[in-house]
Length: 192
Image (cartoon, rainbow, N blue to C red):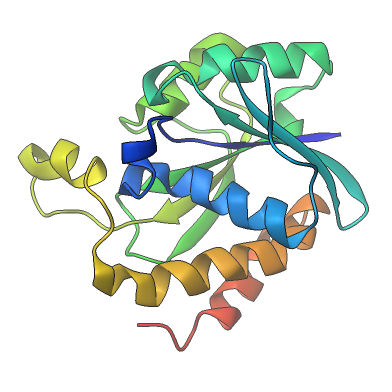
């Protein structure tokens, strides 16, 4: 089993914020691949399904971003999952909007959701799907930017990117992150 975690904040008024792109990605994956309805478990919302023949538990922590690990750790412990079976989908300031990068392990790079997961899992050795949202230009503007809603103009790249992630998810489930990134890039190459 794989545990795919979307990072975000639970308040309905936060649903369209840049920080919630991880939730958005999981919603599209779950919808596209016919996952079960979302239900409450592990201090979050979970849905189960199959992607590319692999059983996947999708988890959206309802603990707020800074405490995401408090939801991820009990889910991983319940299913006896090693960090390598966990993938976090999260916003990434250091990538241009719509750019996707996948890596295993590494630092939190100032991302409080990842920092919480590292602390609660006792290891940073899980997979990360870094979903580019761009940078506002200065460090002082970061908090307002990530907690701001996507602009109407962002829909032009956001929707195709989330669709491409869902359409390419079987490659991610198969442990082929390079092929996943390549397919997402091909599916979104005409998106500006």
